[in-house]
Amino acid sequence: MKKWTSMMLFMLFVLTLGMAQAGEPVFILSGRVVEMKEDGSFLMEGALGEEILVKVDENTISEMENPLACDQFVGVTYNGAMTFSLPAQIYAMGIQEIAIESGEITEIAEEYLVIEGENGLVRVNFDEASLVEEELAVGERVTVLCAQMATRSLPPQVYGYAVVREE
Image 1: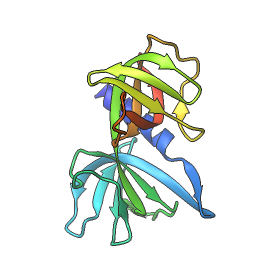
Image 2: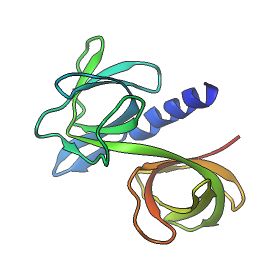
Image 3: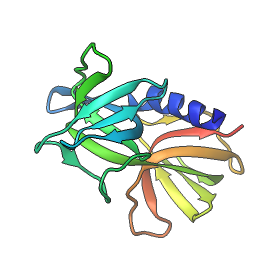
Image 4: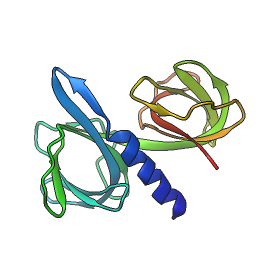
């Protein structure tokens, strides 16, 4: 439970990042799906245990490989507007499944690192929007929050939202 809470706190901190898209601010909020609604909307539990009702419609872009279901970790792209209600509500511009990978660092470069975990080697690419702990070293164990979809290369490559050192 402690690992779940700390990972969710970290996810909220990391994935509530503001980015620009065609001049309009875009934010990503992450959490775990706890309830599906009949209209396709869903209730999401954020890092601090808060509930957020995520509204979707035909304009919402889904980057999910499988249908959305309870207990999935997702990143929701939205315009920053959130209701002051219980639960808070946002409109999803896009939804992406988030994976959690753990492993030992085998290689470090300026814009990526390679970890070896349960599924073998994975290259984690990151950019200025990613949160990566400083002074990581080969041999350290890390947990990575990353995009669910990976390239079909060897090793597979994923985009890393965050890389945190395991304690």
